[in-house]
Image 1 (cartoon, rainbow, N blue to C red):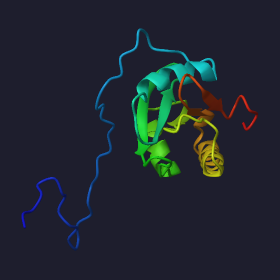
Image 2 (image 1 turned 180 degrees about the vertical axis):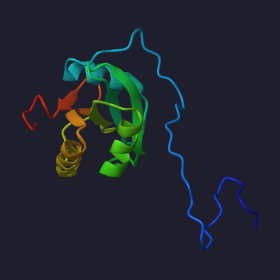
Image 3 (image 1 turned 90 degrees about the horizontal axis):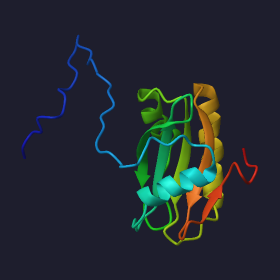
Image 4 (image 1 turned 90 degrees about the vertical axis):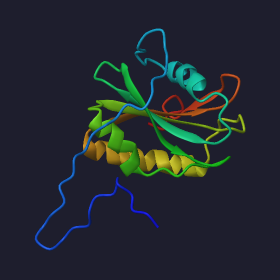
Length: 159
């Protein structure tokens, strides 16, 4: 068995670990211009391209500035065919580090049917509650289906 050089040493008596927190850009998604999000359809078009050809559920967030311009995309979770594990801690980690003013949650349904599940509704409610506490507003949750179909929680009056 070999030791990994990336693991920090274990705390020793009289020593407290010091951590550095940072956000690292891992890739870039090409767009013609930085999109300002005005409608759920804007999100569905952008993320439909981003999530095309995925065979598993991906839960992503769009990080927005104060003018609703997208400053980043973060894939929070990659799940299985019909679910992805999502926790508010993971959703807000990137939003806080990127200084996002607000965010939009989205995930795809590989089945093509964008109808939200009861779990989708529970997750949406929970993440919105946490956002209110943190001061990072959730503007919408979009479920991306196939052939341009989508479900917007905001358009359906859930928000």
